[in-house]
Every structure is written in C-alpha cells, then in structure tokens.
Image 1 (tube, rainbow, N blue to C red):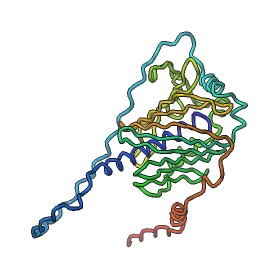
Image 2: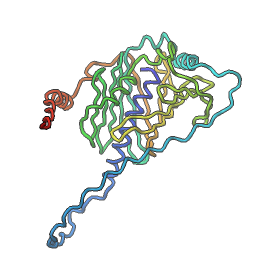
Image 3: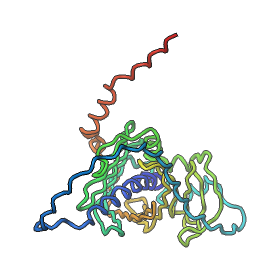
Image 4: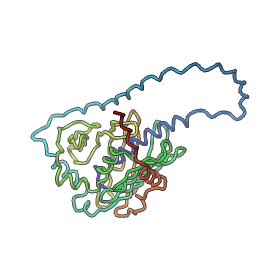
Length: 312
C-alpha cells in the first residue's frame, strides 16, 4: 500500500464514518428517560384527521461548500513536472526497490472524533493488485467497515447496516485500492499536472492535480503533506481535506502515522501504531453473509415486465 492510495481510501472511509458517527453520537447524547418518571397523563381524544394536503415537492439537496482556495506562492525558476514530484516522493518514502517488494500491508492504530469525544481502534488491510478492507470501531457505537475484493465493494455500519456500493463508489474504490499506484504514477504520471506552489497547513507544497483531486507534496522533503478530494457517499459527493503528519520508518519504507480528515465541519484523526508488510490473509476480504445474501437476491430478482403496448 503506497502513500497516495493509502490516503485516498482512508479519506473516503473517513467521510462515510464521520457522517455515521456524528449522527449516532448525537443520539447517544440525548438524556435517558428516568425509570421512576411520573406516569403520563391520559391522552386527549383525537380529533378527526383533516384530509391530507398534497405533499410539497422535495427541495433540492443543498450544495456543499467548497474548501477555501489554497494560497499561491511564487515559484523560483522552473516548476517540476508531475513525474519529478512523484519520483521525489517515492524516493523519500523508501525508493522503488523497497516498494516493489511489498505485496500487502496490515496496519493497526486508533481513530478519534474529538467533537464527539470518541476514540477507538482501526485497521487497514490491503493487497495487490487492488483489494482493501478498512475497519473502524468506536465504543458505544460499533464497527464501521468498507471492503473491496477486486470486484464488489460493500460497507457495513451501525446506522445504515450492510450495503453494496453503487457504481460510482466502486469505481473510486477500485482506483484507490491499486496497491502499486504510486509506483505506476512515478513511472507514468499520465494527465497529472503540477498546478503550482501553494501553502498548505503552513508548509510550501507542490500542488499536483490528479483525476480532479489535489495532492500536496512538501517542497523541501518531497513527502506527501495532504490532499483535497471529493468522496462519493450515501449523502452525495462531499469535499474532503486530509492532513498527513509524523512520518516514521516501518522496515525499509516510510509512512505518515497521523492523518487528520475534515469533512462537513467534522474532524477525524487517525494514527497508525504498527504496520506489517506481506502479511495480509485472503479472508480479510471475504464477503460477509449479509452482503452475499444481498448480492444473491439482486441476481435472483426478476427483470421488470415490459409496459403493455397502447391500443391502436
């Protein structure tokens, strides 16, 4: 799991998790009903129901605010190409040979949502070519997980229950789960381009645009400082900002051990404490029984009958 797609997949999982946990935390904060409360007064007789008025048209979903513009900085000399930025980042995190030797990763750490005073455990398992499973567990709420087995993507959380991802979410997961993505981008950046030098969280960074997302690489070290992206969620596309910090060595490669995700005014902090390379097991990506049942049911559902033809 290389740094760029590590951030991508965790950021998208974070967007979904922040929304779920924020709603559940609000419910948990409601005062409990006292067991010895006075008995309720008898209900007054109901008046005859008035005829229902036609339901008003559902208002369009509000447009999500965009993140503040990045402050542009002057560039001395010629700005680097996207290939040069990706290559410097790859070398700063261990180099091509070290990353080519990695076929999977198992990472464990913690997740925290400060505003809700929640802190729990999280784990990420990824394997070549494009499988990934992310699990986040918060006390009093439960476990939120997402998985992509290379073909099917699904999620499970305490609020929505089991769900099979739609076409757009699966497309994002498949791209983000590419285990060798950073190696491939350094070799062939494709349409990626360096938009300029900007200030991101107080650090001068090269701003690289990739597939409509913004990746920020520290000008001095070459390490990835963060990203701005749009995540497909059940609530629609949401703008997400991620800050990456505290890089540490895990064997012969370097990874950010702390990332802060901001989405819809909510903040989520994730930290990694342990990373094992080439240790992922196939059962980490196994489809749960609930998801398999949903998938089988969708296959067995009969196709809609064609509408009858109008009489001549």
